[in-house]
View (tube, rainbow, N blue to C red):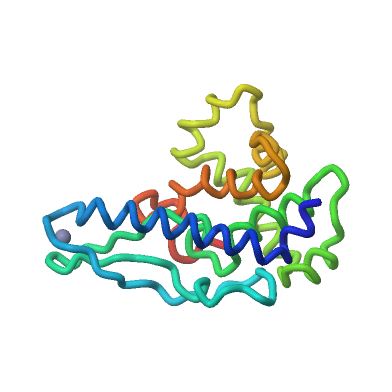
Length: 192
Ligand SMILES: [Zn+2]
């Protein structure tokens, strides 16, 4: 059931709309250091792993720059998980499919999203070892009614959210968005 989401262009369109809201909110808050106005200064991206019909909107990560002090402000995102080249939804779904109770074969995951076995292993390591060490997760993990099994990330976290798989993935990406800002500092350049 999660498999079909990887090729479902509508979920990737929905994530654009959410990112637009997040960007509008961030921009309305203005520069964090002065009274300058924020102008677009987007990062070019060449995202991997999405459907063939992925919108050209995925070619840019929204970011702003203060017209006065030049401080950059990159809003949180549900499209991009840090600066990884693979889309956030792909980093979630590929791991869910590969490391779930009935794991999908690596070759099948590769067919779906073009990700190598090594990259899958790095993502799995990130979820189970590095994500769990972030200040974000440490602060929030105790707030779930049912404790999250950290060895079964990201699937067990995904299953904390209500609704059908599409709604769960969107809710999880929204939940993770604090990790995607530059201020969080946990998913900087070179993050796998
Ligand atoms: Zn400024």
